[in-house]
Every structure is written in C-alpha cells, then in structure tokens.
Image (cartoon, rainbow, N blue to C red; front, top):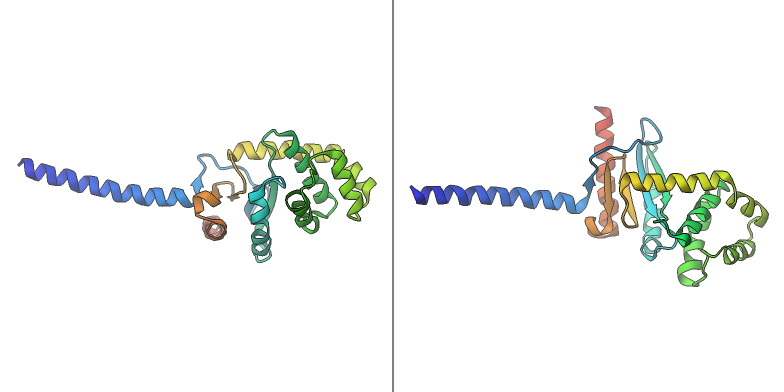
Length: 211
C-alpha cells in the first residue's frame, strides 16, 4: 500500500514537473501582463519598441528592427517609445527622438543618431553638443530648436514615461504586442528570436480580434 502511494506521488511530481517546464519555456519567450494596456488604433494590432538612443543594445538591435518593420502588414500599428528611466541624459535623447519624429526625420536620422553616440562617441545628451550636431547634419537648426523646446515634445516625453510605467519596462530594447504581451531579447533568447516571437504574437492577437 505504501509502495502504491509512493508511485502515485512520483507520477504526480512528474506531471507537475512537465507542466512547470512548459510554463517556464513560455515565460522565457514572452510575458503576459495582468492588465491590458489600452492601444491607440482600434482594429489594429499595436506593436511597441521601447528603446533609447543611449542604449548600446538598442544600437545593435536597430538594423534588424528596421528590416523587420518594413515587412509589417497594414493591420499592424508599429510605434517606437523612447525610455528615460528618469535619467537626465536619456530624457534629452527622448526629446531628440520626438523632435525628429515631429519633423518627419526620425526614420531617416535614427541610424545617424546611434552612430554619433556609439561609434563617434559624441555626447548628444548634452544640449550644446546636440545643437552643434543638428547644425552640421544639414537639418534646419532653428526649426529643430523650436520643436525641441515645444510643449508638444515635452508632453510626448511625459506620455512616454506613463506608457513605460504601464508596461513595467525595466530594460531595453523591449517590445510589446497589443497591450498585452511583452518580449525582450533575454527572455526570447536573442534578437532574431525576439522578432520571431513578436510575429507569433501578432498572429495570435489578430485571431483574437477576429473573435
């Protein structure tokens, strides 16, 4: 009788172990938020990349992300959200992103910003250095300065902090899908696997919307 009980207990432990392994594998690829974050465009699958120009990992990830984003279907709304982590330097870089975005220059100038910071070692988080770089890059320096100092850009930086808090962002680069799933390179197992997981979650979210 005791032997039968022991066998049953071992079988139960084996089942729990198998279940735990599957759950762990799922957690390694992505995490599911307890509360869904509202998305911007109804009927579309929202994908966010949380990043900072100051992050060397984001610098490495950027070329892969750019190639991937070119193939996104029309029902996906892709957004980049710069993270500050309440650092003065990264707040300046977030303002830089939103200034370029407002000027329609973010996609074109993004690689140059990363290169200036990480390859050329220019401290663009210093406003005097930033303005010198803008002037040397061929952009309209006055328009850039006016936009950079605008209420609209400051409001977007504040909003980005709220979005980051809602998603509980603790590191970058990180991606979110449809206000529900969050993925990082460390949990997914690398940048390529991260984007593959995002693709899978886009498909899942699309099917969920179809009901």
